Amino acid sequence: MNNILKKILVIFFIFAANSCSYKPIFLDKNYDFEINEVFFNGEKDINRIIDSKLKFIKKSEDRKKKSYTIELTSTKKREIVSNDSKGDPLKFEMNILVEYKIMNNEKILLKNEVEKNNIYNNDSDQFKLEQTEEIIIENLTGSISDIIISSIINLDDN
Image (cartoon, rainbow, N blue to C red; front, side, top):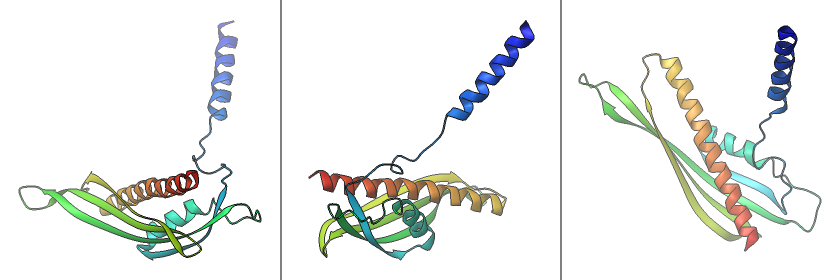
């Protein structure tokens, strides 16, 4: 009897774990606007991440949707925050700045900039440090992308 109860609990937990799924907030939403074009300047990695997030809001055949064009300029800066007694870096700060304009029919509706930063520890393993920095860039840029989409949604509300 105890064995059967354990098997039932294991099966229940497997089904419970498989039923949970992650979906980005802005992925499946049906927007009443579309993004025609996005023009990028600056850091290629940051621009690639933002572009992949904005591709979810594609141009459609619905003529009733408002159409926007976005111009983005991104910069990335890595600075040493603290050093050890030998002068070697202990902590770094990654700073990402994205300036963007949202336009409709070549008229600027919103001009804004978003800055995100993160402080992280140095690692003696250069490969591990580079992986950490890539993850930080991905997370900060994803957050910036969400802010850009939210600002378009807020434009639509006005």
